[in-house]
Length: 134
Image (cartoon, rainbow, N blue to C red):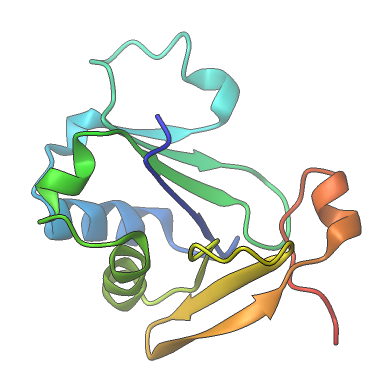
């Protein structure tokens, strides 16, 4: 998958996020897999074009991924603009690497704007994505 990769806040309403993906991209909801990463293999439906991996963890634990054909569906917009549109439509927050070359620096996107933040290196080592305390 992996052309677009966004990480949504754990408290995100997943149904609202999926509705936002459908609204922004026009993709058939049947082509969106929602569930744990280990459930994708035995998934009985058609091959998904978008995945929304839901993990029961704090921080930014809802992972959105979309393949190479997805940018065309959304008019070629950059990942940061996609994050902004989805956050406004689903009333949530997301993290994206935003193309930064600085290790640990990510872009926090909210329904009203964005800001650069630093993520917690120790949490990343444990497989979690959390904003570092300053």
